[in-house]
Length: 116
Image (cartoon, rainbow, N blue to C red; front, side):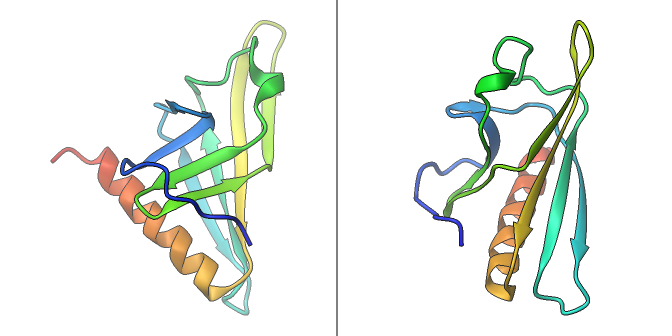
């Protein structure tokens, strides 16, 4: 189970602590037939906080909201000779409680992208 700490009242995705990722990802959700386990795959096509200079130091994707922080170490980078092509990150859950927490973050994040 991921540790959740109260960090910030804003909703954000971060790869580098303190720097919000500005590229809104494409997100796909998958749930196992049991309904308890599943994953969300985040695809960033033009990430703003991961570069050719810092990609080796990126260890996690952080999902931050008013309840605290969720994180995952599952990050895949697509790199060509001279630039970063794409970043895919997978957040997984193993219980209904973890899924509900993730969905609260997802709703807050979606609402933060919508104009008021």
